[in-house]
Image (tube, rainbow, N blue to C red; front, side, top):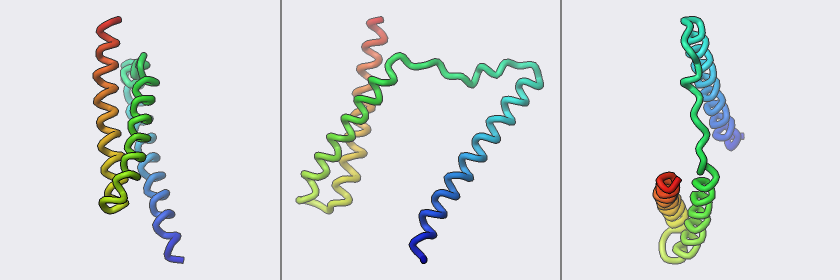
Length: 107
């Protein structure tokens, strides 16, 4: 019975955070419209290279999982997976940043 409290509290907290976020966002937009301002400031322009960024990031995460598996024989398994996934995920985001900036300058 105790094992159900952690996932239940996690999902309740997640729901509460999302509920507060969406209701606050709606109230802000309604206040802008009420004052006559344009609510288009909340719309982000679509990134031309979003799929490239996600692709590089997910490939880097996969490399992190593989490296974590290889490193798990040397150090603690949890620490190896956690650190390698974070390290290669961050490295992938940095690489994606440089690649997308180079492609944007080329355009």
